[in-house]
Length: 115
Length: 112
Image (cartoon, rainbow over all chains, first blue to last red; front, side, top):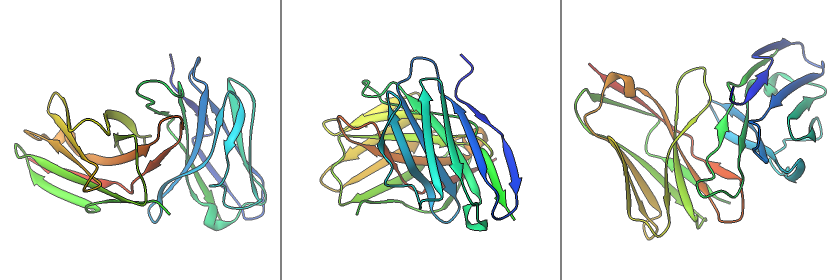
């Protein structure tokens, strides 16, 4: 398996633009997580899905952020409009969900820079 | 709210020594605790899981302890090597919930 796939790997955009980050989880995993990582705040959970259904979005910073999971093999995280303080590395992770170990498998991340 | 603290942002040790990293938490009763390794430019990678009813877990040169009274986990790397240099994150989880709460991480540097 290729592991969790994220695109793009790097994104540079200007303030006010829409940004869409994409994630393909590991086949067979039924839980998907979006995280944001910064030096100041560490790794923060934004939202997670079980069986394509959003379970907890309390970590989403504000209405400018939205996430969808239209099917088991694809998810998007959208920021509209983007702001400089959104600059961070965004990780997607997947897991079997409720398994004995419940370990999460992370993608390589998308480094977002908002100018 | 839950708070997870890892002992220091950075830890430098000499090759061959034992590295000990600390994870302390408050306002939380985790059913299990996980440790992850993160290399620069990459996502975290799972290393070990320890459950609340387990005192200690080992895997090769790694050892994890879990003290629910002290609300603390210790992560040890024995006979450390420069290749062990990375950031190590602890994460807390609950039975029946798939989400994890991550600590801020400790950046370990093993000096040859």
